Image 1 (tube, rainbow, N blue to C red):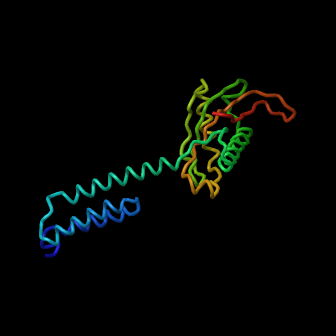
Image 2 (cartoon, rainbow, N blue to C red):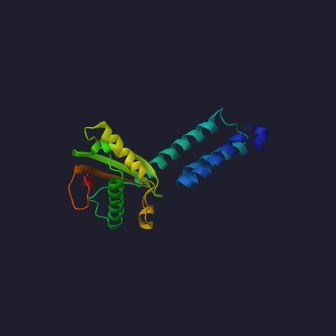
Length: 198
């Protein structure tokens, strides 16, 4: 009996589509069993219960989404000034130097003349694009906090991850303490921004 005559032609085809998704997510065993069961019932002329194929597809899709979300979470890492991995430490140092250099050219007007300290996390994707910038602990000045977020955005895109880092992670969460302070030096600077341990 054909799938069309049995009224079940959509079930196996839908299941086969789900199988392709499950293969990509490493869930081939579960999907394959569901497909075999559906095709077996179809060949025997046993009609599938209304909505059963849809329920199978929904369950498998939910399992795929959970697995993919867990995989994405595993491929994120928080990096700070105390990170010891050589590749990650080098990337963090380059990021900190970039922020400090840009802040010298575009020092936040709101931060001039006073000391401000705040905790900031800048999340960068593997291609160097900015995912987001967040204030973890504010400075006490809304104007300074806004200026810091604008500075972090203006510094993007950042450097792409080195190959060794890109193979392990899709995103790095770069956590730092940003210190703004007035200074007097021979270079003529009136203030500076330095990034330190979060």
